[in-house]
Length: 218
Image (cartoon, rainbow, N blue to C red; front, side, top):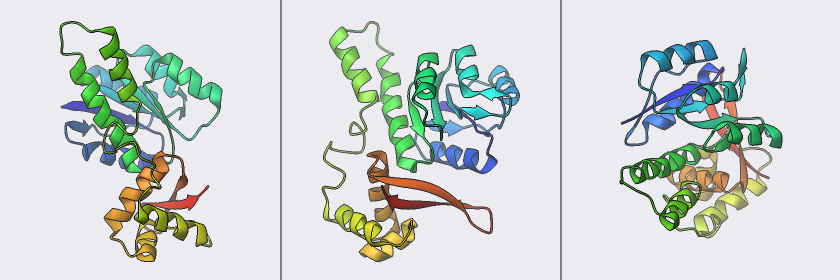
Protein backbone atom coordinates (compact mmCIF):
# COMPACT_ATOMS: atom_id res chain seq x y z
CA UNK A 1 0.00 0.00 0.00
CA UNK A 2 1.32 3.44 -0.96
CA UNK A 3 0.69 5.98 1.81
CA UNK A 4 0.00 9.42 0.36
CA UNK A 5 0.11 12.76 2.18
CA UNK A 6 -1.83 15.63 0.61
CA UNK A 7 -0.63 19.15 1.45
CA UNK A 8 -2.99 21.95 0.37
CA UNK A 9 -3.90 25.12 2.23
CA UNK A 10 -7.51 24.85 0.95
CA UNK A 11 -9.31 22.34 3.20
CA UNK A 12 -11.95 21.36 0.64
CA UNK A 13 -9.46 20.93 -2.20
CA UNK A 14 -7.23 18.78 0.01
CA UNK A 15 -10.20 16.55 0.85
CA UNK A 16 -11.07 16.20 -2.84
CA UNK A 17 -7.54 15.18 -3.79
CA UNK A 18 -7.41 12.70 -0.90
CA UNK A 19 -10.62 11.14 -2.16
CA UNK A 20 -9.13 10.83 -5.65
CA UNK A 21 -6.19 8.96 -4.12
CA UNK A 22 -8.37 6.59 -2.10
CA UNK A 23 -10.25 5.56 -5.25
CA UNK A 24 -7.08 4.08 -6.77
CA UNK A 25 -6.35 0.48 -5.66
CA UNK A 26 -3.07 0.20 -3.78
CA UNK A 27 -3.10 3.81 -2.57
CA UNK A 28 -4.38 5.30 0.68
CA UNK A 29 -4.46 8.96 1.66
CA UNK A 30 -3.53 10.09 5.13
CA UNK A 31 -5.53 12.96 6.62
CA UNK A 32 -4.74 16.00 4.42
CA UNK A 33 -2.72 18.83 5.99
CA UNK A 34 -2.74 22.56 5.28
CA UNK A 35 0.72 23.81 6.25
CA UNK A 36 4.38 22.85 6.12
CA UNK A 37 4.75 22.50 9.89
CA UNK A 38 2.00 19.88 10.14
CA UNK A 39 3.29 18.11 7.05
CA UNK A 40 6.74 17.79 8.60
CA UNK A 41 5.22 16.40 11.81
CA UNK A 42 3.22 13.78 9.90
CA UNK A 43 6.28 12.75 7.89
CA UNK A 44 8.27 12.35 11.12
CA UNK A 45 5.58 10.21 12.75
CA UNK A 46 4.24 8.14 9.84
CA UNK A 47 5.49 6.19 6.85
CA UNK A 48 4.78 8.49 3.90
CA UNK A 49 5.57 7.11 0.45
CA UNK A 50 4.25 9.87 -1.77
CA UNK A 51 3.54 13.60 -1.39
CA UNK A 52 0.87 15.57 -3.25
CA UNK A 53 1.99 19.12 -2.66
CA UNK A 54 0.51 22.53 -3.47
CA UNK A 55 3.00 25.22 -4.47
CA UNK A 56 1.55 28.23 -2.64
CA UNK A 57 1.43 27.72 1.13
CA UNK A 58 1.01 30.13 4.09
CA UNK A 59 4.62 29.97 5.26
CA UNK A 60 6.50 28.91 2.16
CA UNK A 61 6.13 26.79 -0.96
CA UNK A 62 5.68 23.12 -1.70
CA UNK A 63 9.15 23.14 -3.24
CA UNK A 64 10.57 23.66 0.26
CA UNK A 65 9.10 20.35 1.43
CA UNK A 66 10.13 18.46 -1.69
CA UNK A 67 13.73 19.60 -1.32
CA UNK A 68 14.07 18.61 2.32
CA UNK A 69 12.54 15.13 2.07
CA UNK A 70 13.61 11.95 0.34
CA UNK A 71 10.03 11.17 -0.69
CA UNK A 72 8.53 10.95 -4.17
CA UNK A 73 6.33 13.98 -4.83
CA UNK A 74 3.78 15.36 -7.26
CA UNK A 75 3.17 19.10 -7.46
CA UNK A 76 -0.51 20.08 -7.74
CA UNK A 77 -0.86 23.82 -8.30
CA UNK A 78 -2.87 26.52 -10.05
CA UNK A 79 0.36 28.42 -10.70
CA UNK A 80 1.23 28.28 -14.40
CA UNK A 81 4.45 30.31 -14.36
CA UNK A 82 7.00 28.26 -16.37
CA UNK A 83 9.75 29.12 -13.89
CA UNK A 84 7.67 27.75 -11.01
CA UNK A 85 7.02 24.56 -12.93
CA UNK A 86 10.71 24.26 -13.75
CA UNK A 87 11.81 24.88 -10.16
CA UNK A 88 9.35 22.25 -8.92
CA UNK A 89 10.69 19.63 -11.31
CA UNK A 90 14.27 20.62 -10.57
CA UNK A 91 13.58 20.24 -6.84
CA UNK A 92 12.47 16.65 -7.39
CA UNK A 93 8.77 16.63 -8.26
CA UNK A 94 7.98 13.73 -10.60
CA UNK A 95 5.35 15.75 -12.44
CA UNK A 96 3.41 19.01 -12.23
CA UNK A 97 -0.40 18.91 -12.52
CA UNK A 98 -2.22 22.21 -13.03
CA UNK A 99 -5.28 22.75 -10.83
CA UNK A 100 -8.15 22.33 -11.18
CA UNK A 101 -8.06 18.96 -12.90
CA UNK A 102 -10.36 15.98 -13.39
CA UNK A 103 -9.92 12.99 -11.09
CA UNK A 104 -8.60 10.77 -13.88
CA UNK A 105 -5.66 13.06 -14.54
CA UNK A 106 -4.20 12.33 -11.11
CA UNK A 107 -5.51 8.78 -10.87
CA UNK A 108 -4.00 7.72 -14.19
CA UNK A 109 -0.63 9.08 -13.11
CA UNK A 110 -0.90 7.16 -9.83
CA UNK A 111 -1.58 3.95 -11.76
CA UNK A 112 1.47 4.56 -13.92
CA UNK A 113 3.47 5.38 -10.79
CA UNK A 114 2.42 2.04 -9.24
CA UNK A 115 3.82 0.23 -12.27
CA UNK A 116 6.96 2.35 -12.07
CA UNK A 117 7.47 1.32 -8.42
CA UNK A 118 7.37 -2.36 -9.35
CA UNK A 119 10.20 -1.77 -11.80
CA UNK A 120 12.61 -1.03 -8.92
CA UNK A 121 12.06 -4.46 -7.38
CA UNK A 122 14.48 -6.04 -9.86
CA UNK A 123 18.16 -6.54 -9.08
CA UNK A 124 19.52 -4.40 -11.91
CA UNK A 125 18.24 -2.13 -14.65
CA UNK A 126 18.96 -1.93 -18.35
CA UNK A 127 19.20 1.33 -20.29
CA UNK A 128 16.52 0.56 -22.88
CA UNK A 129 14.09 -0.77 -20.29
CA UNK A 130 14.76 2.17 -17.98
CA UNK A 131 14.01 4.64 -20.78
CA UNK A 132 10.78 2.80 -21.55
CA UNK A 133 9.70 2.90 -17.90
CA UNK A 134 10.43 6.63 -17.63
CA UNK A 135 8.55 7.27 -20.86
CA UNK A 136 5.52 5.27 -19.70
CA UNK A 137 5.45 7.12 -16.37
CA UNK A 138 4.68 10.36 -18.20
CA UNK A 139 2.64 8.92 -21.06
CA UNK A 140 -1.06 9.60 -20.40
CA UNK A 141 -2.02 6.84 -22.85
CA UNK A 142 -0.02 4.18 -20.99
CA UNK A 143 -2.88 3.46 -18.57
CA UNK A 144 -6.56 3.51 -19.33
CA UNK A 145 -6.16 4.50 -22.97
CA UNK A 146 -5.04 3.38 -26.39
CA UNK A 147 -3.20 6.50 -27.40
CA UNK A 148 -5.97 7.53 -29.77
CA UNK A 149 -7.21 11.09 -29.92
CA UNK A 150 -9.60 11.86 -27.06
CA UNK A 151 -11.99 13.33 -29.61
CA UNK A 152 -12.08 10.12 -31.60
CA UNK A 153 -15.38 8.67 -30.32
CA UNK A 154 -18.89 9.80 -31.22
CA UNK A 155 -19.72 10.36 -27.54
CA UNK A 156 -16.73 12.63 -27.12
CA UNK A 157 -17.63 14.49 -30.30
CA UNK A 158 -21.16 15.08 -28.99
CA UNK A 159 -19.75 16.27 -25.66
CA UNK A 160 -17.47 18.77 -27.38
CA UNK A 161 -20.39 20.01 -29.48
CA UNK A 162 -22.54 20.44 -26.37
CA UNK A 163 -19.81 22.40 -24.61
CA UNK A 164 -19.26 24.62 -27.64
CA UNK A 165 -22.99 25.38 -27.93
CA UNK A 166 -23.44 26.07 -24.21
CA UNK A 167 -23.73 29.65 -22.99
CA UNK A 168 -21.29 28.91 -20.17
CA UNK A 169 -19.45 26.13 -18.31
CA UNK A 170 -21.42 22.92 -17.72
CA UNK A 171 -21.47 20.32 -14.96
CA UNK A 172 -20.96 16.63 -15.76
CA UNK A 173 -24.67 16.01 -15.17
CA UNK A 174 -25.65 18.79 -17.58
CA UNK A 175 -23.28 17.38 -20.20
CA UNK A 176 -24.68 13.88 -19.69
CA UNK A 177 -28.25 15.10 -20.18
CA UNK A 178 -27.27 17.10 -23.26
CA UNK A 179 -25.70 14.12 -25.05
CA UNK A 180 -28.00 11.39 -23.74
CA UNK A 181 -25.34 9.51 -21.78
CA UNK A 182 -24.97 8.43 -18.17
CA UNK A 183 -23.19 10.76 -15.80
CA UNK A 184 -20.38 8.21 -15.34
CA UNK A 185 -19.86 7.98 -19.10
CA UNK A 186 -19.84 11.76 -19.45
CA UNK A 187 -17.34 12.11 -16.60
CA UNK A 188 -15.02 9.54 -18.17
CA UNK A 189 -14.97 11.35 -21.51
CA UNK A 190 -14.68 14.76 -19.87
CA UNK A 191 -11.69 13.56 -17.85
CA UNK A 192 -9.88 12.39 -20.98
CA UNK A 193 -10.60 15.68 -22.73
CA UNK A 194 -9.34 17.60 -19.71
CA UNK A 195 -6.20 15.49 -19.51
CA UNK A 196 -5.53 16.21 -23.18
CA UNK A 197 -6.05 19.93 -22.41
CA UNK A 198 -8.88 20.03 -24.98
CA UNK A 199 -11.28 21.50 -22.42
CA UNK A 200 -10.88 23.44 -19.19
CA UNK A 201 -12.01 22.39 -15.72
CA UNK A 202 -12.84 24.74 -12.88
CA UNK A 203 -14.25 24.32 -9.38
CA UNK A 204 -17.44 25.90 -8.12
CA UNK A 205 -18.54 25.72 -4.50
CA UNK A 206 -22.27 25.30 -3.94
CA UNK A 207 -24.35 26.62 -1.04
CA UNK A 208 -23.44 23.54 0.99
CA UNK A 209 -19.73 24.15 0.47
CA UNK A 210 -19.40 21.03 -1.68
CA UNK A 211 -17.25 21.65 -4.78
CA UNK A 212 -18.42 20.78 -8.28
CA UNK A 213 -16.44 20.57 -11.51
CA UNK A 214 -17.42 22.87 -14.36
CA UNK A 215 -16.31 22.08 -17.92
CA UNK A 216 -15.87 24.40 -20.89
CA UNK A 217 -14.14 24.47 -24.25
CA UNK A 218 -10.89 26.40 -24.56
